Image (cartoon, helix red, strand yellow):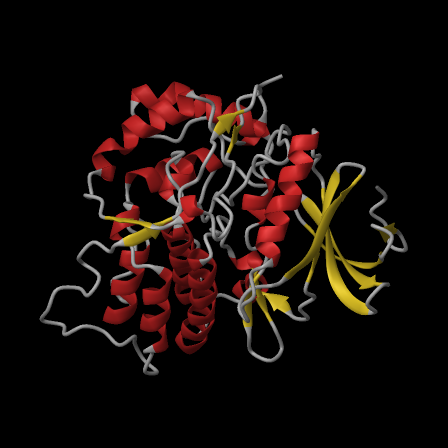
Length: 384
C-alpha cells in the first residue's frame, strides 16, 4: 500500500498532509470521500501475516470502535490493505502534551485539569475491559477548546497477537513510562495505566522525566523501587503521586479515584488528608484487573501479548484483589526469569547506536549482568 499524499486507502480515504511519524506508523490528515469528513488516518508499518491475524485484527478493531467517551479519540474505522493495518480516527486539531513539556513544568492547575480528564477517560475504558498500555505525553491530545483526549487507546491491544513484531527496537510500550509489571512480563490491568499516568503527572509538575538512561537502565530501575517524588511538592500531590507509582499494582488507586482526587484541586494543592493522619492512599486499593489472555512467545524471542478480552466477554469480569507489597523483594528474581526468556520492551523512542550504549548499567548484581546484556543486544543489535 502506498502511504503518500494523494493515495486512496480502502477506496475511500484520500491521504492529505503527513501529520506525524512515529516508530511504528505514519499519521495523515485524510478525507473520507464517502462521508465527506476529515479524519486522521494511521498507516502501521507492520504486517498481518495470516488469515487468523487478519480476523483477530478486525474483531479487536470492532471492540475498540465501541468506545465512546469525550476523553478518548474515537476509532472510526479499521482494516487491512495488502495485509498492512490502517486505522481511521477522529481528527483532533491541536497539540500533544509532549509539545507542552518542551517548555518545562506546567502550572499545577493545568496538570490537575489535564490529569482529571485523562483519568476519567482511562476509567471509562477500563470499565469496558480495555487497557491502554502506552499512556505517555505523545498520546495525550490537547484540543483548542480545552479538552484533553487520549489517542491510540487500545492500539497495543489491537496489535498484540495480530501482527508480527520482529524488527530490532519494535515493541509495545514506551520505556520511559512502562509500569513495572510491563517490564517484568506480569499481568496487565487498569493499574498499569495508572502508573504510567503517575509518571506523566510527575513530569508535568517537575519538568523532569523520572526514569532516564538506556532502556535496560530504565527497566532495571523501576523493578527495584518507585520513582522519587520530590519532598517539596505539596502534601496532596505527593501523596497521590506516590500511590499512583507504587511498584505493586494493588497499592495503586484506580483511575476513578485519581480523577476524583484531581478534581479536588483548590488552586494550591489537592484536597488532602489531615496532615496528622496517615496518607489517604496508604492502604492497598482494590484494583479491578482485566486478565491478559493468551501470552505467547514468537520464534524470534519477542513476547507477544494477545490482549484483554473484548468488552462484555464473560472472561473480562474484573477480579478484585489485594497484593502484599512483596514485589520489591521478588523483583530481581522476576527480572532474571523474564529477561532470560528473551523479553525486550522498547518502543521506537529513538534508540542510540549500539556502540554508544553500555550493555549493562553500573552497579547491577552479577546474576543480572548476562540477562541485561542479552536485553541490550535484542534492542540495539549485537556487536558486529
